[in-house]
Image (tube, rainbow, N blue to C red; front, top):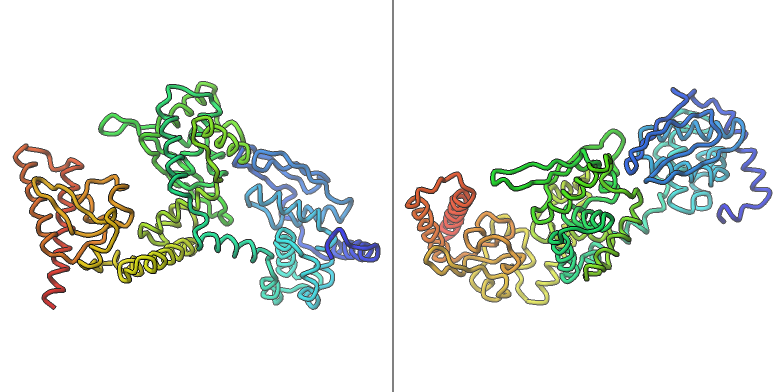
Amino acid sequence: MNQGQINNSERIHSQRCAVEVSSWPWPAPMTNSMPVFDKYSGESRTLNINDETWEVVAQGQCRQFTFQDGEVGRLQRQLCAATQHMLATPTIAKFIRALTANWGAIVIMLADGPLQIDEWWDVLAPDEETAKTGKTILRYAAQCRVGPWHEKHLDLIRALSNRNEVSSKSQKARIRNRSTMLSIDMQADIVSALNLAAERASMPDLDLEAMVALALIYEHAVRPVQILALKISDIAIVLDANNERQVMISFHAAKQRRNKSFVVTRVMKPSWNILLCRLVENGEQESSRRLFSTTAAQVLWQRVKRSCKLLGYPIRSGFSQIRHNGAQVLADTGHGMKLISRYLMQSQERSAAVYVEASAQQAELINRALGVSRLYSTILGIARGDLVTTDELTEAPESMQVGGVLGTRMISSIGLCKSGQPSCPFDPVSGCYGCSRFMPSDNLGAHKEAVTGMREQVAAFVALDTEFNSPAALQLVAALSKAQQTIALIQEGLDS
């Protein structure tokens, strides 16, 4: 049975319950108004408990809610103000919608009390939105000790099903089986589309907005609300030591608990800077506060897909898949939950555990396929300091084997690259030592040869009177130190 199947006797029962519940000694509201702020549109409004109709701007859209008449309607608005104060506007709008649409079930929950709630919960709260709203109101009633409810019932309320178990398990399952990952071809198309857009002298404003949004979601795995909430003042354009533009973006973390919001500053990829700079310049010329003209995530993503198709690189994924892909790439390259949760701007590290689990499962699949037990099934252990044996090195794909010219020397057999050397942007050999994707071999002679080559390069720097505070010199010194640590680790194992 659901709300549409409630018969006349049940409606009469819910009406009686509504009258009964509204007569309970609920606490007087601390204030008769509740301020709400929409991050998408930047619009603030004040909702008054005495008003029978509320207009809430959420995610850029104005939504109107009408409550019941008299004391029942006032109780509805009072419950909204008491439980939703200081929460995000989309959350408030969802709560009001569920409260007004399912009021009959909610007052029955309250009036029938804790002795029957567990028996009738499946009937009264068949979906996630009703369950969440109902539990919020029951919890508030227990804290206020009204009707049959008391604080001793909080554990009972907490144990009621949230109705999100299926959707949550389904999403985690998709992450674990890696169906949220973008194909290599799709990632290449995204990068190609962004590169092509950056090379163009100009493009229509809506297409420019679309490509900036794609760059932000692909590079920083932010949510749509974080993109659409950006203001011109959140973008800082500065010149670095080489007189090149750096663009810094201040994102506001989304979906945080009450009073837990924070700001994270990220730097945009230099080759895509020009897109964001143009968008900022356009906004400043029009005296606009907002970075994007639309406040609707669905509209923005349709523009992204349209713009990419016009550039010749159709995109078949969505915001969410690109965000999950970014997190999974970090996990696959050996990063832990702490860094992944920071990247996703999540307040709880454990939220990133599913990506690490998926990475471990993928390592086991590769292990079974290639029959290289230690190399793939213990990737995280290798990252902590274990070494790759000569046999494991030779059995690994050639693309993962690290080699290159260092000074006048041809270096090989120093280890493996988890992501594959051809896709690595850093210099081979010298750029590997200290990298989280590098798995050093136990070949002592190869590392000594690499150290000799790096020392030759250091001597070349000295001969040229090069300043040792240059990025290239500092990187070389750091790599030399890491290589010597690797030699010491291998030597320690031989001595023991």
